[in-house]
Amino acid sequence: MMPYMTPYASPFYFFLLLLAFIPIILRFLWTGTRFKWYESLVTLFFLVISFAGPHLKQGIALICYVLWQVLITKAYFTYRQKKNATGIFYLGVILSILPLALTKIFPLFSLDVSFLGFLGISYLTFKAVQVIMETRDGVLKNYHVVNFIQFLLFFPTISSGPIDRYRRFEKDWGKTLTKEEYLTFLNKGTWNIFLGFLYKFILGYYLGSVLLPLMSKLALSGGTFSLGTLGYMYVYSLYLFFDFAGYSLFATGTSYFLGIDTPINFNKPFLSPNIKEFWNRWHMSLSFWFRDFVYMRLMFLILKKKWFKSRITASNIGYFALFLLMGIWHGLTWYYILYGIYHATWIVLTDAWLRFKKKHQDKLPHNTLTHLLSIFLTFQGVAVSFLIFSGFLDKLWF
Image 1 (cartoon, helix red, strand yellow):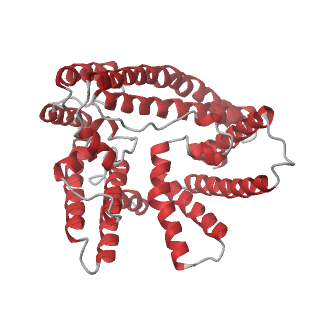
Image 2: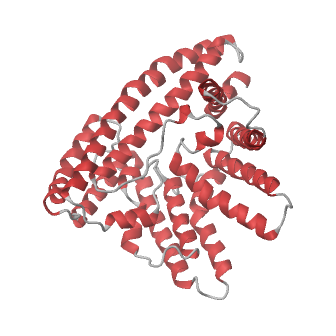
């Protein structure tokens, strides 16, 4: 029986990646073309070891899920020109989201839907819904089942992203690379993977396995407003970044070896001078997906229907809807919902401040010191939000 292996969790996994990638690297360097049939076998192999053993049911769920999404996207592409195209569009989106929604909602009623869920179902759903929406927009002119399946099952990013865009992925998938272009990919991939080792296996491990349990004990013995809770807040914030950014570096680095320019997920987020800038730097593929496929479309609908006279009011309503949805997506618990409300409120206040600042820019100081102060204060606010997100307050209060 094939042994189960968590993606990017052990040195042996990276050893297998290296062995599997040798023919791909040589093919790119020799001809500049993609080894498509071999890459499909590599994808199959790494999916099998990721869903083997105790996760075999998840593997079966993944197969059924992909068939479901192929059926939905193919049907929408075929029937999108019918008279009731709007109804077909909304039906397609609902049916595409349905498996994810069931895995989130049914457990609240003590209903077992484990046969539906698998590692990465959220990120695959975002990809599938994106294809339906961009087909409706007329951005996607053609639909290729094989390319769509390759897009969904691209194994370097299947478990936790980054969330790529179909058009960009399909372009890279069919692109011929010069030797110099592929060497650039190899350099970027090698750098990302080694930086990921530093982030996840050294800094992330020390923060999460050594410091975080210590701070947790101090906080539980000292109470909500103790130095232990403060320490837990900062350590958890740093741990969350280095652990997730490390994984994302592995995912993008592996993608580069395959000649796919997967977008990065983090861009020095803790150097952001305000919360809007933070969300342009933190988990970027997810925040941009929600911006493009939720917030912008909601704003278009609100303004088109003229539900609110003020564009500012419409924007604020959009922020609260967006971040509540993001909170609920993480889980239907009070702290995830509060996390969403917290960020929505902060962004609304930031927007108001930026408008005020623009009107009074001649009277307000703006220099290196104020910029550094903005970065410092933004990090404090973000750390508070991560303390909420962690669920640790649930232990302290209840």
